[in-house]
Image 1 (cartoon, helix red, strand yellow):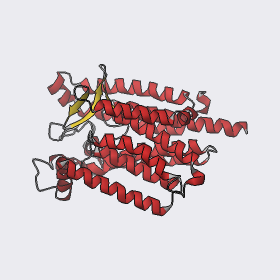
Image 2: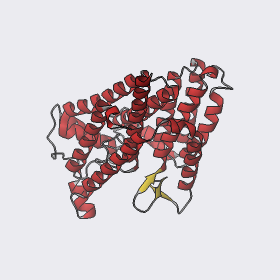
Image 3: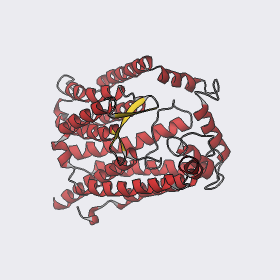
Image 4: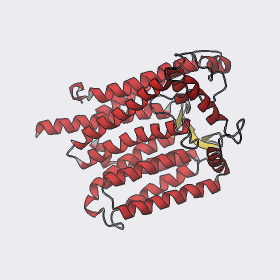
Length: 369
């Protein structure tokens, strides 16, 4: 695919978010890197490696014709099921923090759910594009889709990973709404999703404790609620303009995961309300730009795929920020393009490459016609 077809506004938005991520990791991890690894630049070096890998993944995603994903969508779901099953095998999957979500590939650890989310987006898009004529008939329309998607969701629940299950369910619901699934069916799916979440809470007591902590964050300030309270302190102390890059106090071991799940707290502390608003506006701009381009596409699969991938990026950011500012219980969801990390970071940039390919092919087809 030629670079002349590239949608530069969308790419610039993503690169600005990724650049901010590198700056924030550099700004906040020197103390942790020196204490844990003897190198103040340990985390930023790895983040730069992830950025290079991610940009390469973006380029690959841009070069592959997105219509291939429609052809192999079901195979993608089958592959994702295998990945998730392998993750659950003792001795193969890596267990951390009570969850078994990672595969050790030697050079790095792969969080298999990141690939699964892309496979689900491709399958849902292909299914909705194919079943538009039968979408009002639950038995012929939505039921077969749910039966296929149900297996990877069940496997994700066994890790367990409630945060990503919530993310997938929200994206599914929004995509079904865009695909004009009848409201009665959407309402029934909503009730089913809430029931599954309650079941997960009953099976996994630590998740229930997180919910209890969410409703009373000051009950256990040094235990279950420590993360959120420290996040509030970081956000509140930043004020409007913040303390300046590198001047975070909470990074001195007061705020756990300040470079990962809670990096938005440090953005507020160092950059203040002003930088926080800029980050939010960048995600809004990404959403608006992608949806605007998607509406111009003639291919139903391309349209649904663009919407699904955009939702996975933006809804993940919304969930992360909601946790950080106390609107949701802790989910373990990173901030897209900004949080330190490998799998989520690299695959999110690959997804951007796929989006750019969808829009480039759509533009080319419009020019040809």
